[in-house]
Length: 414
Picture 1 (cartoon, rainbow, N blue to C red):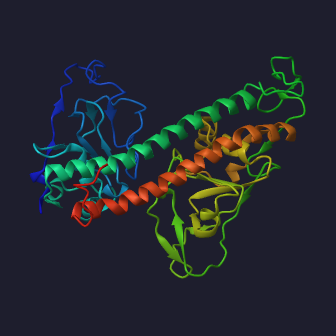
Picture 2: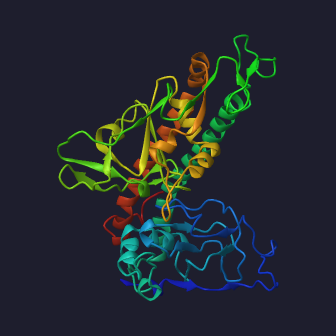
Picture 3: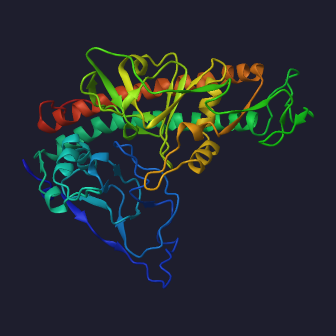
């Protein structure tokens, strides 16, 4: 065994920004290769593109094959194996493998849950705990030959490549869903009875509080109409244990694998929302995009999970389910929710204001057609997410066993 400092260096090289206005030269660093703690995704899910560039001079430099970890609240497990050169916030730690250390192996050393537990335990601060760099570099790691490092890295990266492939497929499916939703319910180019585009073939439009809408369509309140009803708090009594899903356990539409177990007697007070079939859920907190869909095939959620009161739930009709879920996935919904959020320090939307969100209520036959088109997309997304959950669980079980030598893959064909 040896300390982390023996297999990697903590890099603090700066990118020099010399102009007077603190503006970053796009030739040096751009939004496409800048990483902040905000665009690092929790629970080892890598990064997403940054939305804006900071006007600061103090930016750390990183290189391809470095390992980046958010040093704020280590328990969020924000980690990324760099696929390109770039710059990052000084709140991100940059680790670089030493000679005779496989960089991908280093990534898996730092991906181990035991590392994040250690970084959390030794962190400093209360409201915004940060990892102690000195303590982190004393983290004990196994002394493994380069040959075994290469095998372990290859074995685990094959699992992660499949997980990432499924995520890319899902992202593409969500993009297609958004385009279809926009075409049908924002541009009104759905097919009429004659199989022609409604708006392009002079379909009759009427005025509404949301602008012109097709004849026969109406406007109603989200959670207080024919399409959806707000789900109240309260759960059924249960025996044994269930898994508790707080908003922190959801990233966009993905639910963590490592969920806390609760019993009827020791459950937190916020564990008080019951998932039911054909319901959709969203985090009430402003600027928090955390969404859960509970379809009739979501037995794992329905039978084994309890949600936090940090989520708002909507019970949908059979016809409206995929339509309402598509609406929650839209940027349009995010803007409406954020504008109606209240509070001083922690702004969030309440049930009263949820009902102030107006949505278009299409004719039933249009929703039926939309369901037929969209349902296979969501079934495939669910299938991919289920596979990813299994693969993630396998990876997280195997990782410490591979590191400890309990499982030896050095002579295995991978």
